Image (cartoon, rainbow, N blue to C red; front, top):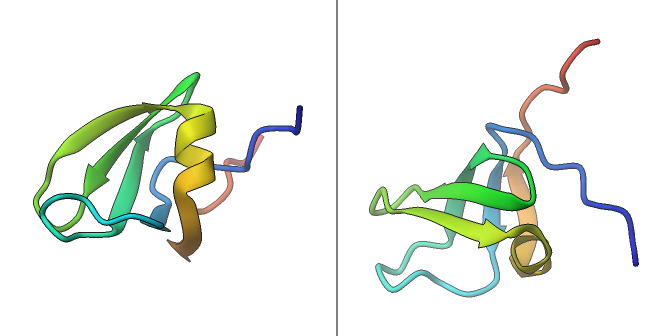
Length: 69
């Protein structure tokens, strides 16, 4: 099992398969065991299991700043 990908709230990613609306660009809104993301084309919000979401990412379009501790 590989470690979880470094995802941050506010990241914008391109997914491999298009949403039914035709959009491939998503903004990460929630992080945990499930990833919440919003389609930037139609505004639909999805809650996807983290392994499935990570597997579907093609590339990062915009990276959110890292949290400072």
